[in-house]
Figure 1 (spheres, helix red, strand yellow):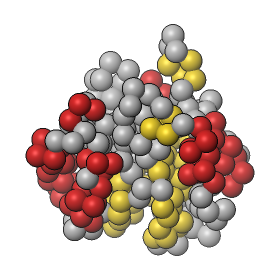
Figure 2 (cartoon, helix red, strand yellow):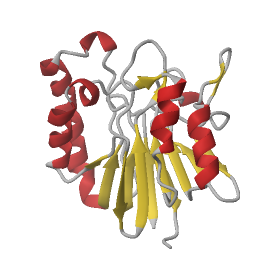
Figure 3 (cartoon, helix red, strand yellow):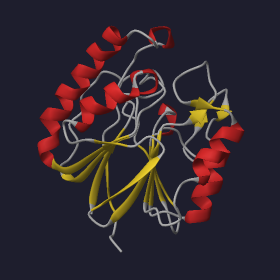
Figure 4 (cartoon, one colour):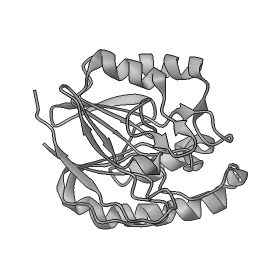
Length: 219
């Protein structure tokens, strides 16, 4: 199965290569946390994202979206936001699984605590969440990276989540898709798992990175 992967589009609208699946691993928004409870403002931005998905959805059999830390409406007004995408036929995964075309997907928006953004959990809560990833998961989609894999920021260090990394190492999915750390864009292949950081933005918030397509075999 061919999967096109994007994340951290931040109000830009890339055109991914057509495939069986499109994965957006979060941060369509640029909204700051001060707008967490401003439904009208947040929904105006969401509406533009919905319009974009309508234009590209025809090129994919299935579309999966996992929110990011900037996508505040999916934390504060989750039922409203989910309905907007699910009415379009987009699968929204917030710490949950779905099986599509013979592949088992799991998605989570949870990332380490940083400046009080959406879905920021401490280590204990992250460990609890990621313990819930089913053993038979083929594709793990998280907004942030596992620790030590395409998560390095110059002057800061590794910014990924060790709890996620531990669980991915346990279950060894075929594919792990994420964004969040723009500087980590690219693909790393391990024997069992291919890791894809598909951030469209670079570290200076310039949309210079291209969508990434990968092939995943069905059981």
